[in-house]
Length: 362
Image (cartoon, rainbow, N blue to C red; front, side, top):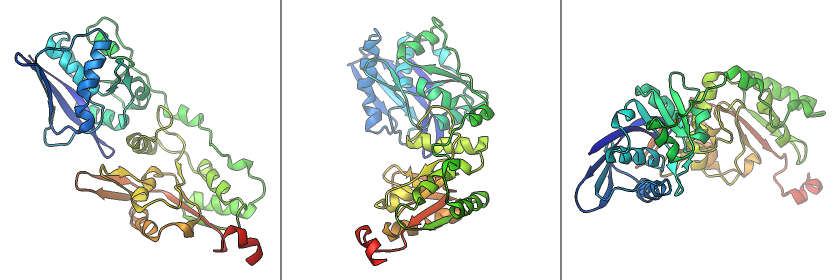
């Protein structure tokens, strides 16, 4: 029997629809996944098998073929575990195939049947809405993040049995209701408050002007004068993010796996990479074209402490993203375009000598 359901993939920070097809036929028992799966997707065979056994479900003893369409796009990550399990159950007749129409599922399965969080839930939810999906099954940890997409019913799933019971009309899952963005902004509390800084009148005035105009800043002063502290306070005096800015920032951090709390980000990001950071880590790249520090600081602050210690190639790589407001990362196996509109704040000491000699030589 053939059964199919919708899932979502992630390319950069853009989601795209993926159709999971399960074909259950008589023959020698086997389980094959096709459609350009990577190693993490291929390993879903064992995760799905163990999760179904933990939930008291028997795995089909048959010739089972899974296809992830479109077949010419490489599928990455464990987020296809949940839709694969549901498609297999539908091909076995455990689930009604008609219940899977207009529905999409995303989630990683543990061996105990628990549904684990995934990266890029917000981007996937947006892509699901554009693809005409009306209901999205997501891990409970990602549900609040995706619930802000209007017109999409987001169902939080904690266990594989929860999704099965919902689709069999045994126990309905209540959709997550999103909170108004204005309410979330009111609850925002900066990690370091600018009002707590005593003194530093000229430095505070300079940062206030820079924050108002979106200017880049270079702070020069001896060690211990408060340069790093002032930089960390800067996001707290920047204007509140609009809903559109919050969605874009949340998408980037969700895709990168750096989202610290569920729901939308309301505080502007602050990134402070070590001076040994490489050019690829700053602007993005790697085999999977992941976002770099300049994109993770989008609509926020990128702080470079000890500026003269940074590699020149890394600093030169920042020139074009800062001018254009975006960075295009192209690799052999992947390519992506990330926003990179950040406020650059740098700090340095006035003396190039080692700290142990500064007081004597300067």
